[in-house]
Structures are given as C-alpha cells and as structure tokens.
Image (cartoon, rainbow, N blue to C red; front, top):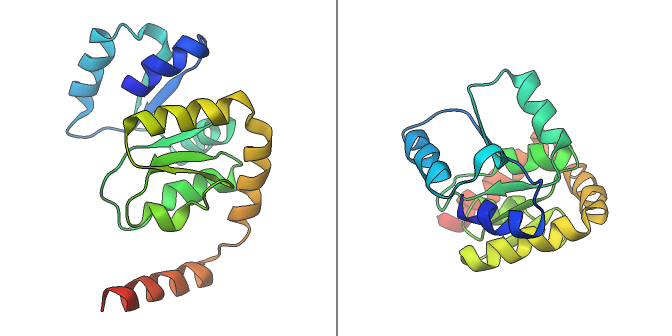
Length: 154
C-alpha cells in the first residue's frame, strides 16, 4: 500500500489490484483507507483463473512483496503474460527474476518503489523482455531448477 501511495504521486491513475483473500486482507484494506488510496486500490477477493489471467496480462507491473518464498511461480506467470515484476531479493524470487529483463530485485521498500517507478516510466522494453524470459521455462526446466536449488541446500 505504501508503494502505491508513492507511485500515484507520479502516476495518479495507477491501480493496485490485491487479488485473493488471506489472513492479512482486512489489515491491507484498513491501511488502504488510512492512506486514502480510494479507487487506486482494488480488492478483488477470490478470482477465477480466467479473471486473474486477464488482470495479470493487462497489468503494466507485478509487485511481489513476499519476504519468504519457495519459488516465484506467479512471477513466471506474470512474465508469460508480458508483465515484469518488482520484488525483494529473497530465495525463490531471486531465481524467477532475471534482473533488468523480467523485473528488478530489491533489498528494501525504497528500492522497490524506485524500481516500480523506473519500469512504469518506460514499460514497453520490460514487457518484451518478460516474454523472452518466460520462453526459457517449461515444466522440465522448472524441475531442473528445483533440483539445482535442492543440491545447493544439501
């Protein structure tokens, strides 16, 4: 929500779609009201796969704020839709983002905001590169990646 507040200072019509439900959804909704985000923050609730795909593929940017992740499958799904991602540089996420191509990995919230604004200022190359990165992945390639991750941990 804080990222959106800063992004709309440069892009007043920016929208943040919060898809799904979860234990923190009420807190996010309250924070949205506290920050006076109004129609810029849209809480969708649970979505069909088709509706989610429609939102992701029409988005200019995917914001992924997880600080703990096994593998960023939704990042690759966004890339396959031509949508780049900004995210924290944490295990799992780091393997799904090729920095400078299908997104930007960051260390903190300030960097996350700067990365989002950077992409939004000139999104077309990011869209094209995201598709190129996604072409590298298949179920077979993903299985190889998982195997290499497990080998690094062993």
